[in-house]
Image 1 (spheres, one colour):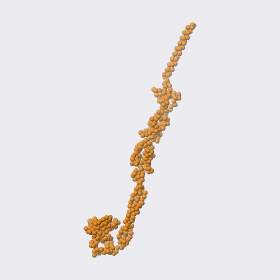
Image 2: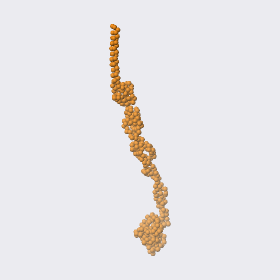
Image 3: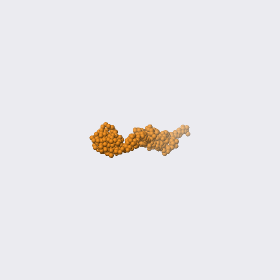
Image 4: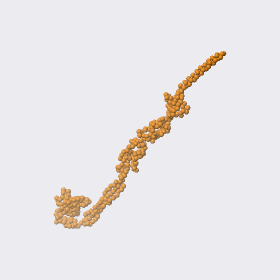
Length: 407
């Protein structure tokens, strides 16, 4: 075989090999391009931290499984939230967490996810956040595991005290804390109409009652006693006041308990005689009357109570009354024993008189017609006899007497 023939043959073989190699390379490159065309890159966000994984035909389950196997994320459990977005090829993991919300003396545990806020925790707890209530953490704060949130209540409370009303916005607590917030101090016996340990509520009205004490005193008269002394300077049946009685005085001290200025209870704390009364002393006659006492003679004379014979020109017998009180008579004479009231048309003013009972047993004695008696003027009585005391008037009463107009 010639060299030319051999060379041509070798060239043909080389050409066939190159062609086969090219075909094989084309097949391999096509396969790689096909595989690359079916692979998708998935973005994984776990509690805000981002990673990625490439997969063919990704699904939530396959992506999550692959990410865990490659230790890109921690395994998830029933408390976690997983969301796969096929359009954006993202897998979002929000890990579960718990938080405690405290209000009104109660603590509630709520389950939430990474990224949730304090406001969402309060809403899930079931507590209502009032207009004036305050959170211990800002409402927009992102929660962390085992977060603790508390709600402090504020209430409008009205305190009625010392004649005024005061409305305050008061932090939750009891009535005692509201008084403290208002700088109100209770005295030892002051009290409120609502128990001090009662919890505050919106619109609560509390009335404070102030308890004070005062002492007052009153005086009252102490009656005097009447004593009798016997004397032979007066005839039997005659009396005379030796010493006028004077009332004494008793002082009573009271202690008044007052609530808001009004007396609710009174206690007597002392009662004593501060001025002793002066006894009234009355002289009682023991002297025997002489025989023929105030006896009337047929010759126009009479024997007076001293045993003296006295002439008279007229005699009037009738009812007489008694009066006292002092002052002055119609004739300008002082109203005193012996100056009597008459009907001046019957017995003229200035007439000298002697008065005794018809039988002479009761003697008024010598008198002057000095005053006008209303009843005497109307004819109801003969005269109104003046006595120095009411007791003498009472003893005399109304009785028949004979009035002798002396010569």
